[in-house]
Length: 253
Ligand SMILES: Nc1ncnc2c1ncn2[C@@H]1O[C@H](COP(=O)(O)OP(=O)(O)OP(=O)(O)O)[C@@H](O)[C@H]1O
Image (cartoon, rainbow, N blue to C red; front, side):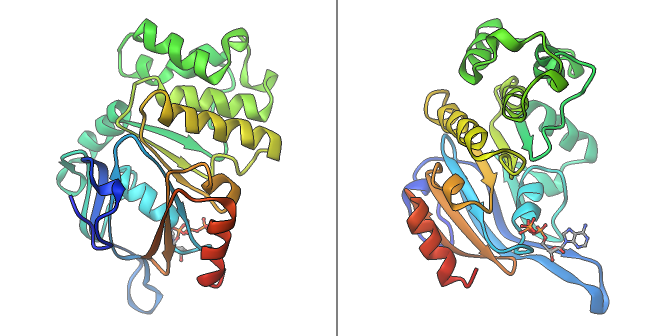
């Protein structure tokens, strides 16, 4: 698989998700906004990809269109071999439930459920029982074994986000999408959650795509994609905080 940006190590394995000439336009006439303006990109399986760019550059739109939460105006978005544009709303709902995991800035836990119940909620909704070994692995990896009976209000922000990460992983998804997952956390909790996200890719073989504004967060990724004005303008392999900062300065952020 190749991309318009050429062959990189991320293109040597089959992509978990990809966009081809992706255009997303909001509104019409003079008020039209091109949030995505022809993005072609492949996200390799088993890798941690960060998406960066100035406010309004299309990061969340790209994430939402790749995750079947929103539809492209033209072009294609794929999860594995499934082309999302030709899928019905019902098929997209099933795809999101069964093949994708989500982590949002605001945790989105149900306050009346315990941590354990929040983690298994996606499976309960799908009428599936958890794979016990995988559930134990996930709970052990996120370090919540002694907090499982607690409700979200009895957990710190970092612990709540770790519950959300476990919930995203419980169905062993093909791709986990994270939109500013550390945006509501202090720097110490953020580092813990980012370390956990890194472990989930390195040790559990998961695929992760994360939108972030934070160069320190992006440095946990295998590769950073840079968007500007709805276009993919650069990619950076094996990022460090300093190399990400230098690249951001080049794009005037
Ligand atoms: N539902 C919508 N209706 C109209 N315009 C929208 C909508 N969603 C996003 N946009 C516009 O599309 C452009 C891209 O938005 P998007 O949220 O993808 O950017 P972003 O890079 O994630 O920004 P931020 O870093 O501020 O979250 C912006 O100009 C935004 O105002």
